[in-house]
Image (tube, rainbow, N blue to C red):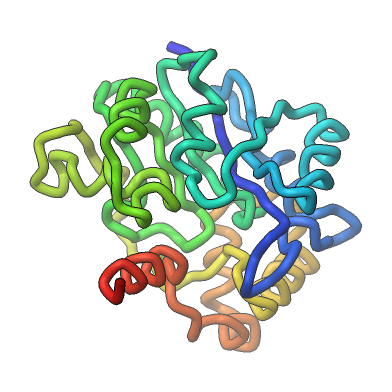
Amino acid sequence: MSTIVVTQARSGSTRLPNKVLLKVKDKTLLQIHIDRIKRAKLVDDIYIATTTEIGDDVIANLAENLKVKYHRGSEDDVLDRFYQTVKDIRPDFIVRLTSDCPLIDPKLLDEVIVEAKKLNVDYYANIIEERFPDGQDIEVFKFSALKKAWKEAKLSSDREHVTPYIRNNSTYKGGNLFTSSNHNLKDNYNHVRLTVDEPQDLEVIKEIVKDLGLDKDWKTYADYYLENEKVRSLNNSIARNEGYQKSISKEKNN
């Protein structure tokens, strides 16, 4: 069963412009992200899904330099961008990542893929119940589920964020359109931020990498974060999934 990672990357960001091109230890966040994905053993191929905006020429060029395939599509309809990236390949499973998560754990990535294939559900992720750190979000779904969502999803929040239509209509959420299950974790690390949305997040990543390097697992990074109040205080007031919540609020106000 073929498994392809598709990671979102664009230069446009209202909170932190060009964030995936910012550097830590002379490497862009996008390169760190891709380098760590390449260490996963169960990923058959990697695609960067970026936009057709002129500003994202630099993303396409970086993809070529990193020897990673890419597709350019809609800036706002990210669900369409995802579907167009894989529609001709039709992989059995697609892994959705976002490139503002530079410290994504390749071992965790393999763990989630293994369970997704074993359960053979339409959607399997570690975010239905958020117990992993923000920045370790991994979603695995079947191509058939993506195609159905692409055809049926109408809300802008479902188009902008790719998977809400699948997740919210799945069995784990009480729906009946898609089968699903959650990758569980006994301890709760959902208050740990290892993602980069704001300038403060970048400072956290810099501190972590300075002390621990770029090759540790998610738990080592998360425990460091929790044990260092100075680091933790930099970004622990930032809300998780702020972008999706903004999309929901915008729909309610229209």
